[in-house]
Image (cartoon, rainbow, N blue to C red; front, top):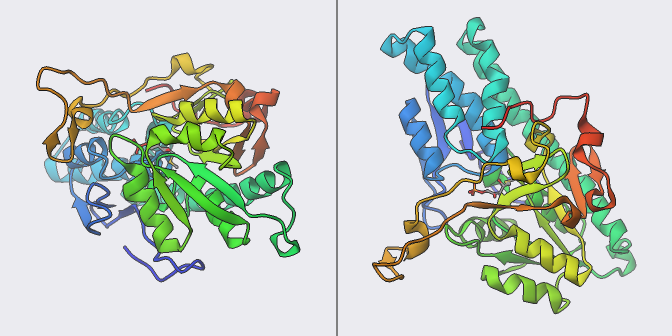
Length: 367
Ligand code: MRU
């Protein structure tokens, strides 16, 4: 599942791929210490992998949704499931995680092809992955153009100061089918010689920032420092950051954005500091069936993830944990939403409802 080096010198990793009769996942639970792929041969295994974050990140979960339908069909044939059982198993894949709309969207896009057989289903799932890569590169270009224009930086070759970016969670190749969304924008800035440094929030409790984003940036040769999540507001208010760029798990019609817990604090700090808070995501993350963030289901994860640090319990045995995996940033704090179609200045009143109504956008109903 590895390819050759891409134009930025990084190995062309794939978080998710179809292996003929199984789903192949890059095991993100063991990164950066080990690079290991898992071959997932049944629906239970896929759901377990999604819940344990072997594969994670909204756009990658869209591809998983598509391949999950194919996997259920393979298992149905081997186990002699009838259509009703097959549809129930597909529903289980669709509901494996509730906040990232892309998972349900990927399932819903591929499921209608089940009557046409496995090759048609696999082709559609592969198209999801392919299109995500194309979308992400457009997001990178659109985001870099908007950021450089907004913060008044001209061409770096004419002496313009490079941009200091803060990011949260992981929005790179590991979270997508290819290239990355928020990290795609950062890669594009770097490729243009317009990036100074990235502040990487470590992203408690599962450390997608320090384990995954820092690993990707290291492989790409992009200068970065890892900071604890609680440093972010101070780093921003001390004038050390020009722009924050994050991804999204679900974006509502009004422009509210669900993303990894901690994103909201970054947005509040950006508003206070008067710097742009930029959300980069493909159209498949827009869910027009949700009007506002109040309608988004926030995944609550095991309290143990908060109460432990690695293998060690760090809170008293009697303490209970609270572990929401995502928060919702209100539209008024979202300076720009960058998609493959362009940029919406959300806090200035440009909503996804206005841009995408009448087209398909997050057609999956709420999980
Ligand atoms: O719990 P995770 O790791 O799946 O959360 C991922 C995020 O919050 C990402 O920022 C989001 O899915 C966008 S990925 C391009």
